[in-house]
Image (tube, rainbow, N blue to C red; front, side, top):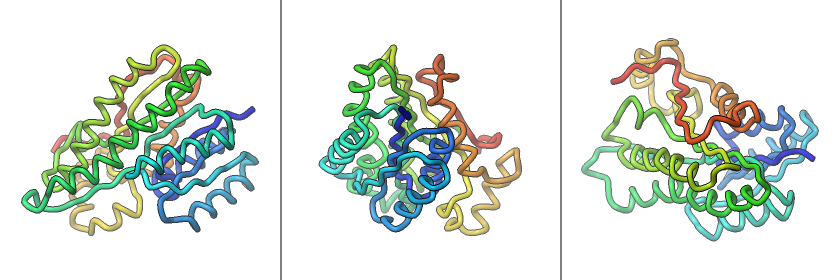
Length: 246
């Protein structure tokens, strides 16, 4: 019986790369998306054809508690167990501090922090019962090596996720490993929207001289969910190409 990996926000970017990486290594995969049903279905078909594993595609808006509960219910109904949870989905509003509001913070926290909290609360106890589980939260080097006033909501939510990684690792020991990956600047459709000037600035801060690839993050995430990483728990791992502090 294959292990099952649930990856939020997996119809694009790093989440998509993670879905392929787990499937390539023999996991059945649950793809979560909000609006990109066509992309999710395309990924589902490609993975099933290429890797001969089962794939379930579930629409769920992670800002809504009822959607999160439905996502988990449908996943367990299909597979009966979840062995890996990757809290990958996130949003990153960007703008001047004076334009930020309680509402913009709340919207960001719902997806970037409240959703991982609730998914962990719903899934980790079941992992404890099966005496096996791996959870990886996706944060950012923004709260490890660099800070940006324009992304205050995003940074605050991802800092909270790092703290939650530590506390949930304690809460669900010894059977559930909870770790956090902090990607640096990774080449996705989001980085393409930054513009040449901003991208060149961040490139100048990366020792490797290039943006990372989504697949490079996915490999680290998958490793943390493997038995080879069984003694790694409650850790924060940067994948940033040697990003220099700003």
